[in-house]
Length: 485
Image 1: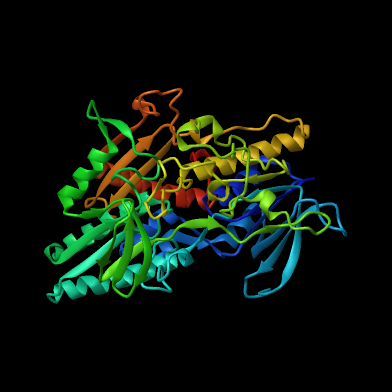
Image 2: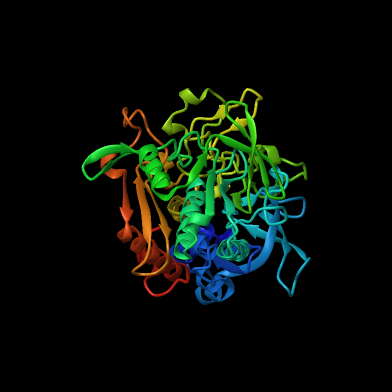
């Protein structure tokens, strides 16, 4: 009998939990620890953030699903990992702080034979003074943040209807942010809502990003086929901005935010301000505040985690110039090299380097989009970790475990505006692989046959279908496992 402990119940963690209960033996115990009581399908927070969906449409309680499936659930915050146990036990355990109403504040140790770290990111609003809901901007990173964003947007639209011109700033709030795709999608949803409200001529919309070029999306941009021709995501995205009258500030690091003013620095070292009446700026991510200790009680956090707080896995972390990094440097098994019974998946693992080329301003400020690791790749990694654990339980340490590098993994992104069946549009993109491989694909780094972009209502239908399909899957309803990650 093995105890499989999963930290986090987002896309990676929840996917891992459901597959673990389905794939592992009847005597094996699956345990989930998450500080949140609800599952949140985060891609649809964009629609909550413009008032097109309610929180209830993008969330559901975790406890009933886990009870139905026989998964042990602890609503708690993981604080410390003891991979070797301590003086009282030789079994690895995680120290947690309960956050539910019945045990709030209680501390306990939860033992494990195998650990999957799927804690996701810490939303590091503190990296930029004035950023976030506790500062002067809104967010769509959580469903509660998105509700606040929708309320603020409604007020701005009301002001425009009353004849007052409004400035809107949307994008990322730090030079090292990721999830530029989400900022891009929210920008076009906001533009869609303002246009639908009949006040588009009263709005000045500015997209501010750390991307060096439009269409970079933190993956170094794309070369893809469209209607039989080759084009770039740069040209493709620029045309979208031009058609919708959206301005862009590129290669920007947001230094601080004061009421109605964004202070930023550009890659060339110049500094300027952007005034706003409404601002949705995403925060940078870092690893959650987990610490690690050995059996003697000595802290070993720096051995398990990168300086960013994300967990080290089987990647090549030796520093070298950006131009010398290879696709093969990316992790394949997501196992920690010191403790092979520990996995880190989704956003929780430390990437070896940026996919987009990092740049520094003359002032020494790093402006570099961080690699995206959300959505489809996160689900694949969660399932992979379970497949590997199954083999390890069956065959022991010498077992052949699964592999799924992001350099051999595709992804799809559908940025949709509107949420109905007849009204809406989407920019749909696929890429293969996520991490470009210039050895295998010398000219573009990616397969042209599998990397493409389209714009239209059909992509919007796909996004809407994916919303309902993945909520269905996450609720573990009949045949859920037949829906791919």
